[in-house]
Length: 182
Image 1: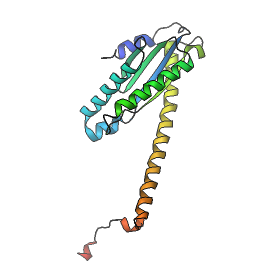
Image 2: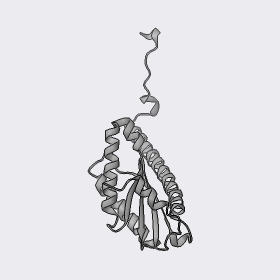
Image 3: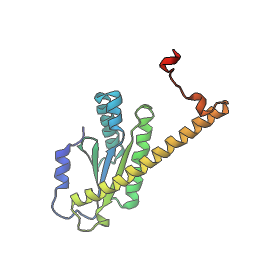
Image 4: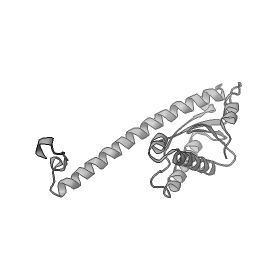
């Protein structure tokens, strides 16, 4: 139900400098490949749809939200300064987390970056998108590092639980019998 790539390209291809009150957000879904590979492309399509519906519902109605293609989305905002944009994106993240409670196997995960015309005077919409996209990749790297740290923490916790039960990691290794043992 969102405007598609053509509309996004039309907005971003405006040759003039963007008005000072414009902001551009770049969103990119995480884990889509994993969902497609483990649960099928129908589940991946549903993941994209859920994100699109939740993004549109969580952004203020007067702001543009579109699907730029694949698992990439943009928002173009009017009248938001840096603090308002941060608050808006924090609200989006909260609403995504709330929506995800109903889907514990496929919680919505994404990276987002933004750029404001007021911080890049004279920039075109495409240039603002490029800045926003760079910031999105910074967020994506932060999320990957956080996810890796959480996995490491979980592994340590599991290993500690195993040790509390009196086992050692070497006791848990499974080895298949060699042909001469059978």
